[in-house]
Length: 247
Image 1: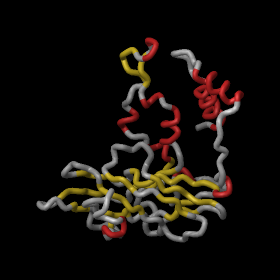
Image 2 (image 1 turned 90 degrees about the vertical axis):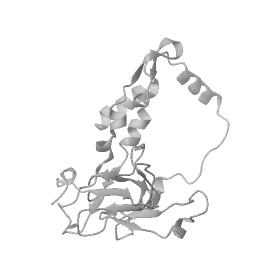
Image 3 (image 1 turned 45 degrees about the vertical axis):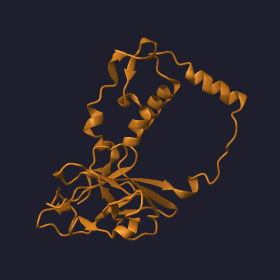
Image 4 (image 1 turned 45 degrees about the horizontal axis):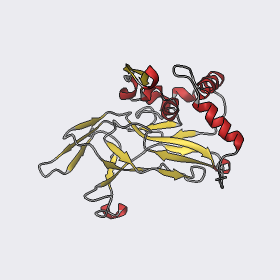
């Protein structure tokens, strides 16, 4: 069984593969754009109050770069329902269905992250057991990131970069539990990690760090002169790019 996103005959440079006995029984990886959180969806683009120069205040929902961050790469989901609570001593308790083929969460040794030294005083490191292997062509790696701007999640993963062109097994996801609530339910399919592939040779090894030229000064000043209520040059080019690329 294949994901709806990959049911075609076109060759691909990115593959997500899982053990055959899990295929069709756990949620598929999906484009990150499908996981925009409710807090962002419900946010209006403008506030009903005047801001600078009498124009309504814009909210984070009007920030185009934030939209792009939500749509970057793919999301690997939690494979099963996961309930999290605390015992009488305040220790975390993780529960999942009895019939699942593997434990979706494992303990780590606190010394593996340097606990109890700052910033990990009293921290309990854990890891999500990820069933999905990420396959990439030679020369490609992937950033494994905490789902970008998903502030609603009750955990925080440790970000990493993996050479997925040579690693031949899934990447487990270390994390810390940060929720203050006594009881939390993570349904199967909850965003666990955002995977962003990139070609290593295209990563600039050096940077040009200097004062701007007169031409660059003129560009910056022109961009700052956008009239209130008018779309910026960036916004026009952003919309043109998305129309051209069909995203």
